[in-house]
Image (cartoon, rainbow, N blue to C red; front, side, top):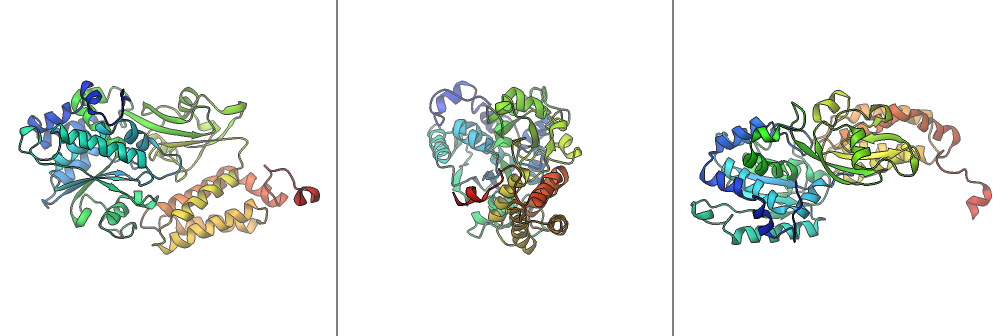
Length: 425
């Protein structure tokens, strides 16, 4: 995904690189079934977390018996260590717009929206300017390019919370209700989405792939990546690396290559202690697992997950209890409070973690943490409490010795012991 010259909302640089060619083909040559068929052949999987086959999702909405349908682009990114969608919104908004137009046209959406995290003020401004320019060129709005097709995009400034990024919570907030995940069943917005109607929801990166696939063909897309996970992915690389940032790499790149080739290795000669391949809601991997391929299936088989590829590197100078507490506090603060197991579970997990980090924990607290994780995992309307439990379980399983050192020393072993003079200084 190439960053263009000039202001990101300017349409001419995008047009010069073949921008909106795929959209023109969709308006004048390709049928909705043609489009879905090409996406299926490409094997594109959703880049928002679950890795669900994109063509299958589009097909389900396209062929739904209910004719009133909607489309929503989910740009409500809010997870720690994940900022790839923000990068795309900021630098190539026209590619996203084209992907959204193709998706909306394919499923015959009655109305189409782009839900943007309200904290992304600059990115939202760029997007709105780009939509205006596309509208002025006749690429959206009324009677698009003289084809008689009417289709517009509305930007919705989102709630800005982690839970609001869960697609059913996002749809609830768009209807003026609190951003809380829906009870299930029904399980998917493809059956019961916006206003209770079938709704196609895709994330930013997924949609940015669509114009390229339709312009260059499915065979072009499958030239890189793995057999079951073709194409490239944008990795948000952060933490203990020399060059944090967003990197586009083939699916299946190893964790080691991502850190060393893209990130320039770990600063100050430190060693890697752990890596979150897909953010803190998935299990960590340790330094002996750095040759794992970064794709949905390989990481799932290894007991973790790719998610939205928010890769966080932790070096050997970091206290794992403190790092786990930091993310536990994040989950506690982001819980919407709808599910009792999540509301109370996130509070109790963070409280116990804080107690151990302060040097006031006991062996009983370690048992309580594991017991609590077992009780709450998988019990919420969304995956927040499961992520909070997996975080603690993973940390305890891999770094139990650090938890035990906190209890034995009655302080964090990564901090110098406080003397009487130091305490009063």
